[in-house]
Amino acid sequence: MKVEQIYTGCLAQGAYYIESAGEIAIIDPLREVQPYIDMANQSGGKIKYIFETHFHADFVSGHVTLSEKTGAPIIYGPNATPAFDALIAEDGQVFKLGEVEIKVLHTPGHTMESTTYLLLDESGKEYAIFSGDTLFLGDVGRPDLAQKAASMTQEDLASILYDSLRNKIMTLPDSTIVYPGHGAGSACGKNMSKETVGSIGDQKVNNYALRADMTREEFIEEVTDGLMPPPAYFPLNVKMNKEGYKDIEEVISRGENALNPEAFELAANNTGALVLDVRHQKDFVQGHIPRSIFIGLNGSFAPWVGALIKDVETPILLITPEGKLEEAITRLSRVGFDNILGYLEGGFEAWAAAGKETDIIETISAEAFAGLDRSEDMHVFDVRKEGEYKSEHVVDAEHTPLTFINDHLATFKSKQGKQYMHCAGGYRSVIANSILKARGIHGIIDVLGGFGAIKKTDAEVTTYVCPSTLK
Image (cartoon, rainbow, N blue to C red; front, side, top):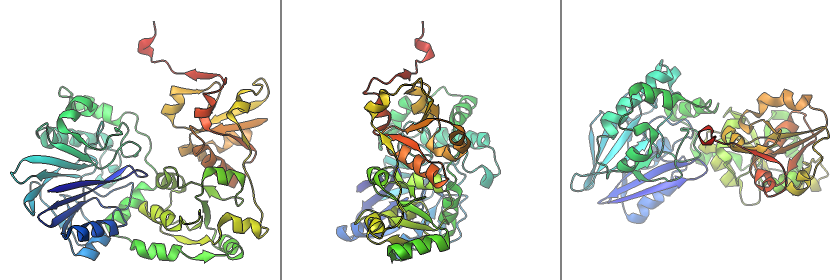
């Protein structure tokens, strides 16, 4: 038996490859499915099943394409209603895979179709679970994403999840391996571990939601506490996963439409497409097309695209580093952004060489920032997450998190005097600055290196002290 976790850091997502005696199962595949097919061909095996733990919200699965290419059936747990052919399994149903078995454990709560797959080894022992978004390491799936679809409140779903965990998951042997659907960085939970493989026993000790003495009421309160609004693109991804989508090869082919600077400018003007620059932030700061949006491939690219662009139907024109076009289109398609109209041939350098208008972002070093006279009329904006800001921040900095940057436009417009912006390391602040510039708000100075660099200077910062430590 072979079990391989295929983890994609940008999405904090785990897909799984299971093989026994030449038969293969794939669980929650990414949209680009050729790697799974290549793995099967290299081993001389055949993909027999494609298991889906639920209708994913944060990425587009490769289930439909993989089934078309291999003939393997797509399998969901109870309550799933896909628009395409699929096998809807019963709770407790067992699927034979070579010399092992995969048992269906219906574990609703995150969504009503959410299912955990239990792998039984050659001797019938409970070897591992593939828990999707039911159980993470350190957390459980948020119960607020399926409210409208299920006509339930998040409290109703949390109560159902409580039963699923205690009746289906916590009854398994402590030695059972846990292979979750996501790790730290995913918006599908709030307290996930950086580890991507654990065990039932470990989670009983370290996962707040699996406390043995936890009441239903305590579980509901703690699981629903502090949930941030889900990214706007989540329902659109669910729709694609439920109804089907274009083959990624078709999306890539369309996006590989080379446009010279004149054609690129014409396309942008005629279609109203969003011009998305995915180069490194240092390159964007030094020169970019006016009103273009920066979201660099080097960061958490796809989740930020989904959170900030939101509508997967948005037409997009790309500016990419040399050799990174297919990667950019692929990663966009993972979160459902298929409407790529083309790219700027020759990149930004070709645009500048053609004499087209360009723009820059003004910057300041962390050392120079620390030496500024704070008595002058100046404003500092921190675009990190709430937890980061509350933990430590520059004294008197205003919190304008990147996720909600559009809600703070009036704040930026109303300020007089110099304005400075930073994040943790310099990636998110450039994204925020590009969005503001695209909306006509200019002159905000980016602090190079972000808060990490600021902390190494003499700048005054405030540190949060937990109330329990106060005397």
